[in-house]
Image 1 (cartoon, chains in turn orange, brown):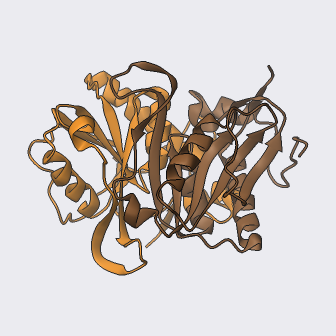
Image 2: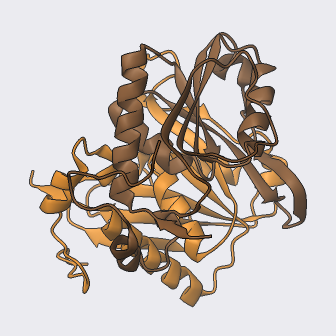
Length: 181
Length: 181
């Protein structure tokens, strides 16, 4: 599968677009919940444009003792969900909606804490079969880019960030978005 | 005070340097604890070079109900510190050691959970009076850059990321570090 290299600045621009979409939509949320580790960087970028607190939950395919799991396990959950989630408007943030396994699981678990509303924001939503549904209570889903199924190389995974930049498809502004939406 | 603009790629390079220093020092940690929100991005970058789980704690000058505080309050703490901290080697990650208020407070609170060891990693340590001491149990402190007291403009706070890049002092490799260490 062909790799798609993305630079930090491109991610920042994508997040800016998501923020504009959220504001146009009139969704005023109380907190973000960033899914770690993929959601940490997009959530912090988003805070620049919509200044709300960021809470986190951690999901991984290895538990804290380095045992490989078949399904993602929770490495950290909210310490005070009654105060942090119940009756609140939440924006769940992650980097990519791939099989939807992690996002779907987090949504189901967050809904048990009775939020007023949960919306989802992801940088990239891949057009591929999903293993979980978005629960029907979720009516707002903000995607930076809806894209074909590509191998995305994120800048935070780059050993050599300057090589990453050179391989990134987009260029200095204006940004040409090569992905058909 | 003169502003110092920093690009994402420069931060990525600084993190790479911190990772090399940690590896040279032989500090093998079990988990990172990123202090939110400043530590989220450096911690995720560091995970590329040293692949360990990231836990988070949240500290802010506004509580979750938007009430302004004189001292930073905890917006999120670890949900299972006995399993996540006790007997573990921890790397506490934040973006900047300014007055040391947040880092000092977190260290004291983490030490109550009896870790095997805690070390600290920050991108930037400002040479200025500190309101808290690093507790004597902490013997490893990794600084990307030790620097004079400057107003640092981080890339994740930029409304216009391309303007930020143009104002960043350093250039494409080789990176010249203008800050005296």
